[in-house]
Length: 230
Image (cartoon, rainbow, N blue to C red; front, side, top):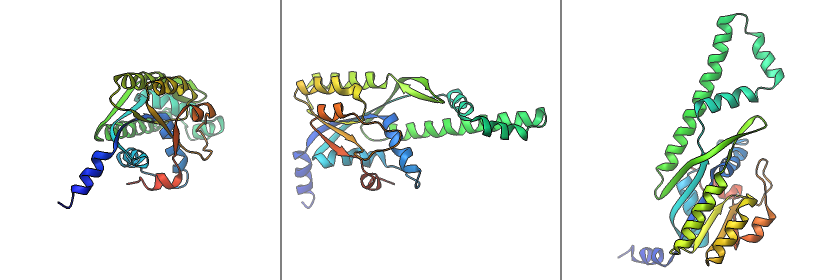
């Protein structure tokens, strides 16, 4: 009988969907990685976002774009600035050295690709979580950035809002492109909570329009990140 109050409390919680722009989430993680090793427990992270609102997480939908090993290699070679590249080439005295240098870059790309694949596999193992990698990639400066992710996320939000069985959505993003879909799902009597850092973080934009469009927000603060590490 000891667990009866817990079961009753769980039943009283409202159900919620969590929608995640993985590019946005990765930018937050990279920011905190500058200062210490950060290994986020994403299942705990998603569950605790819901817990703050008194919700029970029913499903998490994660959206990103798939990167191949070749994509990582192109990104690595493009990121080398001229000075660093020339320094590397100074030690390339013959064809053997050149081949070794190229192999170093390929191995680095391979490690990055394998790391990303392990990360995606880990996300897919989270209970009640779906990862969509159908976004595309586009060069922005020396980086390949995901594109089209917002459209796919918006389509899924719309589909689930029109289904009408769950009326609480948590959106992990800060992209103003989500303003129209947020307004639309709110017309379907869905309560939309935005989860993003109130603190200014390098590489993470903010949208006052999106802030105004949602019902309320959760601060993804350093304290909250630290509460959700392995």
